[in-house]
Image 1 (tube, rainbow, N blue to C red):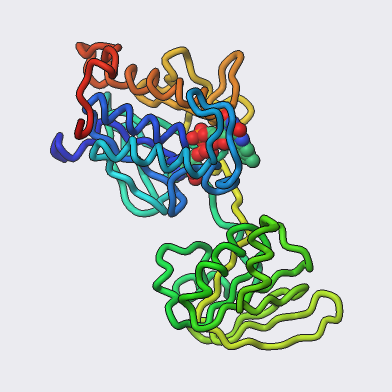
Image 2: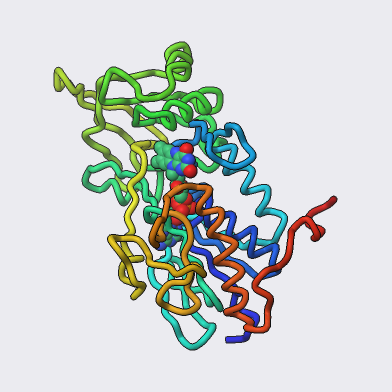
Length: 332
Ligand SMILES: Cc1cc2nc3c(=O)[nH]c(=O)nc-3n(C[C@H](O)[C@H](O)[C@H](O)COP(=O)(O)OP(=O)(O)OC[C@H]3O[C@@H](n4cnc5c(N)ncnc54)[C@H](O)[C@@H]3O)c2cc1C
């Protein structure tokens, strides 16, 4: 292994704490890989409450969670952060001083230091509970949308009653050949305004129905629906099925990495270092006396972890980089 194949920092978790830590590490000229299990950045903000306003971020009287995530992305993009989405870190193995092997479900990365910003754990979509559903994930069963054009002129069925299900239906209305929304309750949980739009769109809305069967050899050809009250059934031919039941999060493997925990949170010292020298932690996943699980606290912990990690990598490095206002960053 050449020294060049070792990254200065692997940051685990692309929530606000991991994103800001990535930016800050970039500002300190560290090479950085950011690994996130979801297909998108933003952690709880993007997954759980993108449209809600947040009022306790310094300098913003209010900002929506998704806007804050977008701003963090712009800030990060000033540096060549190597972002890996849809990848879950399974284990960290320490080989020698300043060499950690970060093992994921899609390969291994070597790092001089690791910063864990895993929040409340790796998010996974809440899956539909039907036999064979997992095999269709290889073909036409989706839990998120990456490219709307993929659905162009296709017959799309969306299952779910929250904001994502309704928003996706409205976005696909103009692109797909047909859009059917299936929800097991009569009432949607989405914003009233979006639900009104959905009812006026040419989207077919089927409530209270649920999916009780999927048929097709390698891809779903037909979806079996059952009416939740009358138990009547019907079949719909489809090209693509999108399931939007929200997310589950689980600390899962993080608890097995040999890092000292207290009640599921990682114990850190005032340098944000764990019991394993060279592994740091920031954000909701950390604990210490007086810890508050707030975005702004994670933002404060990130520079502490990064600057101390810089000294761990090179004991001659300065702990404080000085003030950013003395630096020249970006185009201006
Ligand atoms: C409804 C709601 C409203 C809130 N409102 C506010 C508010 O107004 N103000 C405020 O300060 N806070 C608020 N919070 C709390 C705030 O969202 C959290 O404090 C913040 O998200 C923590 O950021 P984080 O980066 O530490 O973790 P997270 O946002 O949880 O991000 C962690 C990321 O790490 C990823 N991850 C975990 N394990 C792995 C792994 N093994 N491999 C790869 N990726 C992994 C996860 O998928 C996740 O994306 C709110 C929370 C909720 C649920």
